[in-house]
Length: 195
Image 1 (spheres, rainbow, N blue to C red):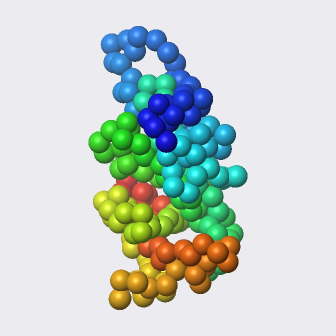
Image 2 (cartoon, rainbow, N blue to C red):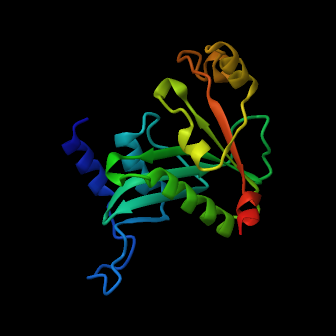
């Protein structure tokens, strides 16, 4: 997909996340984070994320550069069988950062999202996410943001021999082989302790 194609897809979901105007004596910083809908973030995910769009979500957040979406996060209930299904955990299902988001956008967005989830979802105690080494995701943003590496038994085997075995015991659909993922967790109580 060319940058022109991406611009067309991204432009379809563009909106002003804050009031338009001159900005007054204190101009609004260009990169803003807001709540978003699945429909809004799916254009960016289709254009920029290797897993593509989602069908549903518990929460979606978007990062806007002026009036164009340049980053997004999709949060849902965890899908792993061994994680709590009582609504106390949320999984980061998609996180898309484009180069246009700028330097440190990842850590800024993660800090904003954690505070927003703690403020709006009082039943959620723990956040979970996965990084995929096959796609160059080392987990550096999670580590820098204070997340804890919490490997599954698949991840422990990967750490031991560099191969491990994939999630879904090889394949979710019986055709496509999955790679081992690294799991990261963040207890929202860390935010309370830091205050």
